[in-house]
Image 1: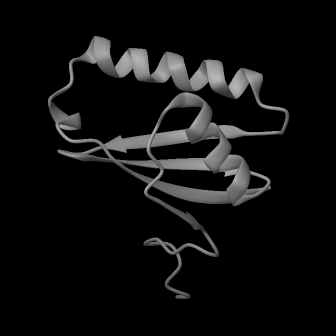
Image 2: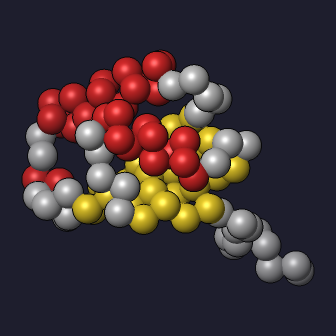
Amino acid sequence: MKKFIVEREIPGLGKLSKEELQAITQKSNGVLDGLDAPYHWAQSFVTGDKMYCIHIAPDEETVREHARRGGFPADRVAEVTDFIDPTTTGA
């Protein structure tokens, strides 16, 4: 399985209520349950007009299929090839 970052442009996203964000979560989970492929939505980060989601899936097309079925934008889908954090200094 591969890890992807999905960028979704949704004007006014940061102003949505907790209930509206919960509805988006419920829709996404419903779509995930109906996919014919292994898929894991790990986490999403909400900003003013964008959402950045971490998904684990077999390929980019499966990520885009999730977006199509859910009616979610998937403006950019990028495969994560590696990561760094404060512990990867090599020291």
